[in-house]
Length: 397
Image 1 (cartoon, rainbow, N blue to C red):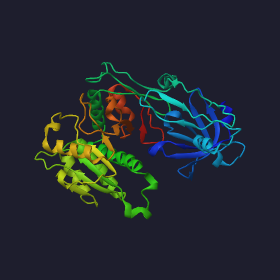
Image 2 (cartoon, one colour; image 1 turned 180 degrees about the vertical axis):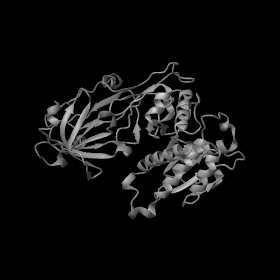
Image 3 (tube, rainbow, N blue to C red; image 1 turned 90 degrees about the vertical axis):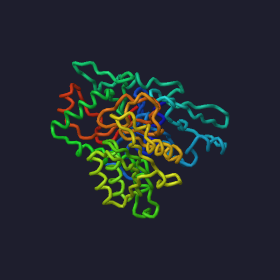
Image 4 (cartoon, rainbow, N blue to C red; image 1 turned 135 degrees about the horizontal axis):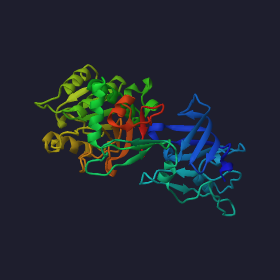
């Protein structure tokens, strides 16, 4: 049945991060669960490559714009439209909606059935059974493994394995190994300041995509600037948030940075705050100065890997309550592995360099490249193959 898709003009909605692709179906691989488009358009702009291949785990929704024999796309744009019109559709498989399920290790293929005048059903090229995505991805001969003389164990929870959209296995590391990784990077010259800058750029890039990317941030929409609130603590993670706020402000985003007035403030935080104050963004020290109405995005940088007692501070509890009551989606940057439920519920979380073994309820996991050289991984005992490809921020499953 896969051959029936060839030549169809389709639209693939891959979410806010990857965007929408349109093109002619050139290949379908039921075994690897991939679909290829010829002469694709990305968000309405012609791609530089002649063909793009997508994995099912990236596709939120698939729509047929035109069937292979050139029929009117309005007659086959969706299965519900065909039912309502009562007209028979011939020569094309039904529209198949590909949506992520509740569990990230499996993808439910839901078959949208089409009925012709006689009431018969047509099947898509895949059945509507559960697909063992984890097993299929493991078959790819691409992997990132940890080879250390000391056993690599995650504190308070077992090691987790994540997968990229190309099938690469990315193993999580414990926080102890993560600290050794950053220490090795500093010895080789990758200073904390450089790491902060790279983290701020990657987090800002992801935030811009979550805000709508080129659809929202255009010179014509300067009067409708998105509003972002960054909740930052007096530590390195907070400095990363302030750096992100500076880059967002440089891209015409209305930025508000919440940073409590603490007696003990790390020098990196003070330096980043001085740079941020040179932008159009605002810095507030009290939750009372934060917006009452919902904002477009909240970026959480309150938590620290080192201090587990921050949650007991009044300013922390007030900021967490504000974030949960504001009803805005939350992006958590560099979340720690605390073994307990975080005070701010995040929809997405961004890990740096390598993922930590986060709990299931931490939201959708993304990974960003903070510029760690290959030698850094070698010094720590990690056999590393870069999972990033052409991107600096990638989703993990």
